[in-house]
Image (tube, rainbow, N blue to C red):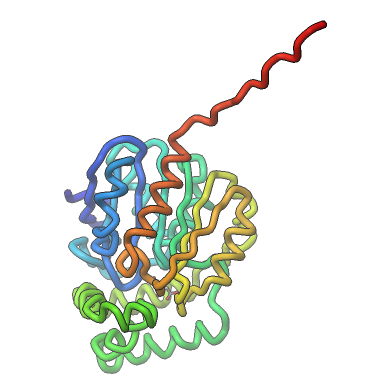
Length: 277
Ligand code: MLT
């Protein structure tokens, strides 16, 4: 379905019924990365997965791709679909956008899912890597940069077990124009640090991380789960940075368990009255 978000139109998948769950993909991918999770999640929830602006089948306008812009797009999708309150999940760059959304519109969130992402801003080394990436894409185009970057999106176990996933992710990334690659690298570099924000996000949260993630490592996930007041942590064995593709079954299990707990009213077990003598 096409959803007009004001300055452009996004392609959005919307299936299932019940509690609405919006999942936002990372860089330089598309909502396709959530396809392996769909059958399980759609059993228990209404799953909404936009292609972010610049990615997949969405429009790819010039201009800003800041976390504020991406969060505003998520808000517009929720509003257009009439989703008053929902669970928001984000993978990597999608997680940076989800944290920004949570900072600005927490009242809309029933729960938060952070998948292979981090709250900390870029380190100086990380920022330099992004500057080098931007310079390279400007001078020679994005192909060579993506050829080097995409294999890092999965872990060593996946490289050994299912190398076709790297080819599939590379082909998803192949649709992303250079101006979007550049704008997203610049936007991620200037994203605000969300570390202090975490303690204020009191909604139930689930932090998921691939055990072999080399981009947003387990340590960052542990810190987020510890700082969020009501979070659980799921470490996915045999997965790197993209567990929804690498190990969809345990990833879907973690999400479905979280969603079921959200949907179940807390049952109060009344202790038997003390017998009166
Ligand atoms: C992503 O996977 O969305 C990005 O690689 C995250 C990042 O570069 O910080």
